[in-house]
Length: 79
Image 1 (cartoon, rainbow, N blue to C red):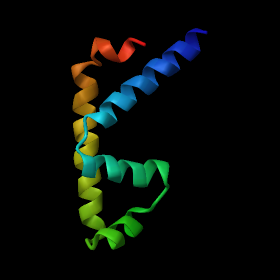
Image 2 (cartoon, rainbow, N blue to C red):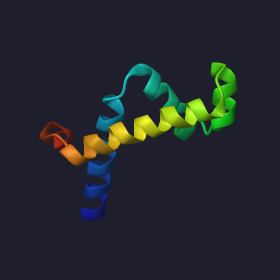
Image 3 (cartoon, helix red, strand yellow):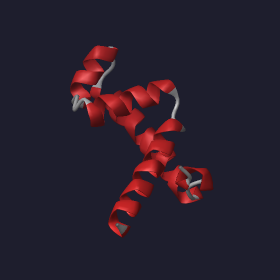
Image 4 (tube, rainbow, N blue to C red):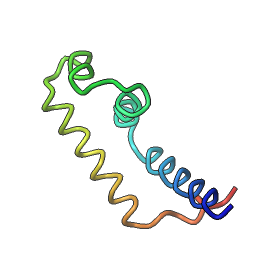
């Protein structure tokens, strides 16, 4: 049960971190992690080069890292 609780808390924290992103950033995370699109395919769809997508993802990761460093707000752990 304890493992399940920690997993739920981690999932809630991750969900909250994703919610903190702007719509374009959320879309990019969805494409990469939920739809398994390659950075190359995303770049082609957006009409940018691969480096631009990679840099956008790095900015997203940095933003999410800051979110977790601040600590997860108490409301994430409720309900």
